[in-house]
Length: 302
Image (cartoon, rainbow, N blue to C red; front, side, top):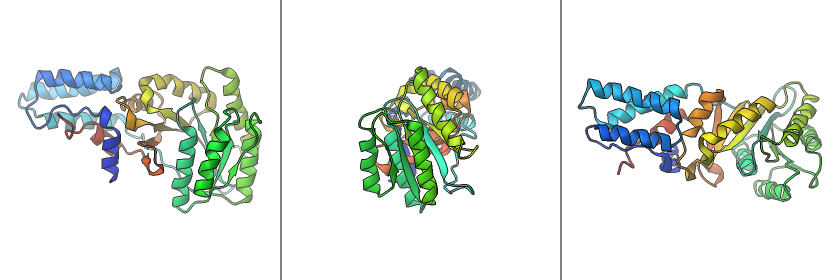
């Protein structure tokens, strides 16, 4: 299955292609409005799309459904201009490139860490994983299973250990191995829990003692099925930790695939990857054109 096919299949539940190859009607526009809100595009983006379609419809009563979808794609691509994150998969002059993955419980951080590790090793890069989730009892075992399967070194400690100390040891080990990339999987935490947010800050402080630029990347892993409710999460983590980008997971099982537009519109954080399934290859580079084409397709019109 090709890239577009996977994207379309993954976002099937969020698809808002309602018109098909026929003349547009007022009822179609009403259906589109309902579908846009249902897909969690948010008020501003939804209204912008509807306004441009209605303007075109007033000028041309023979406007075809596919033409309306093309207008919607154009608006969406404009809204997501600059949203594609680009990750240099190389070590820096001073050591490995450090990526810290953070987010709430259940967002898929550990699985995403493993998927990223496979992606980068498949690209010929040397990777070390740091198991900084010392809070969840099974976290080490879950990541270790992936590490064994992928034959990737993992640095861990016992349950309840100091997560910042694990991050320090992981960086030391990755540096000694001359690794290109260090991936740090941190514990899931509610953004409202100040003590757990402080643990994240400590990890960052400890890393910065090894280099002021560390960590190079701080990516928030967001569950796409939460829709626009995830914006508050993203805002809180960004304010406390200083995010550099986003990974949106579980888009294959949700009808709320439009939420990432609102998140990007709110915070301006680039989106590096999207999760469209359970397999490692289902973590895909975010691509605006493929996303817009998958959302606004007529292939599921009826």
